[in-house]
Image (cartoon, rainbow, N blue to C red; front, side, top):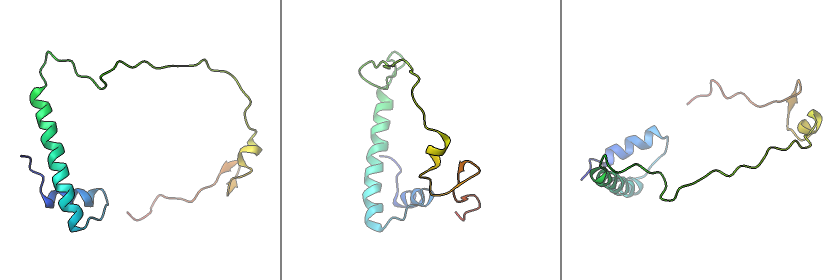
Length: 99
């Protein structure tokens, strides 16, 4: 049995900036407990002679050749922008925002 407690779930909620009610805390406590227990079971089975895998079927990337195509002009790019300045998109500042 893992050590996932309702207090830990509430703390994780604060760190993630998620407001959790008591029902959600109860539900997530059980779910996170099951996840941690299952990870522990997998860790017990893992041995050095078994190679780690991220996918059961080997994957290969499929690439297409790069082809030069038509691009938009600077004016076309900015024509639908809500706000532009000095040939660039203008957005509101987010730095210094209260966390």
